[in-house]
Length: 323
Image (tube, helix red, strand yellow):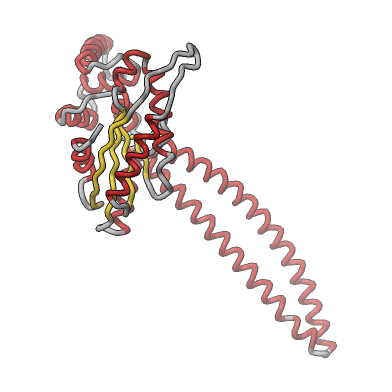
């Protein structure tokens, strides 16, 4: 309920929101209800537009999509998190630069000390005494500066480690799917943008993977079992992707693998290996000991240029999926 809504208004919107969820064939979970409330109340134009667009394309509103909408349009984290991530990266780079500058400064100071050694070798008593005095004073100053530098470096190192941990947590929240640990659509967009900046003509092979009969599995065994199966399948998919590839969860039971500069035939072979690997997985309920049905996947392969619309490419690949 929005703070500006009266209790009477909220009651009306609540009833409409529940009815809307029934029309969408979605359970009244807290996330789904929050989105439905916003949709019915028409207070969040961006959220309303996103849902209407999803429905206009013939796609269903599943829990995966609703969670993404909730994160982006209700929590409003995306832009803010991205900006904060950039600030953290900039801060770490600045810290590293300062450390390098400090090292250069110390090296310069040491070189000045070295210059007094010439007077020590001259044999001139006055020059030798003068050099010794300079070295004694310089040594004291150097030790003091060195101690300060050590303390600064220790503090910088601690702060840097803390920032790195925070950055890693933020990256996981922004770019990783919480259920499977694979990348999400935001990570996909970011990588494609980076590839485009690197080379607008870069080609990428796309492997679209759908889990067969997933909705029937969740209806029969529940969403919890369905999530466990989906997670294990995701891990199997990820095991076939090296560091240059990008494994993504693009939908509730859909995955996408992007392979830059990989031939279509090789991508097809990878897709077939993944299909075979998933078909060999066996699932048994740890509580009941019941053997769960064998899971299979459908695979489609396509190739595109990073300057193309990747969503259009994914849709085209879906249509070419073979079971």
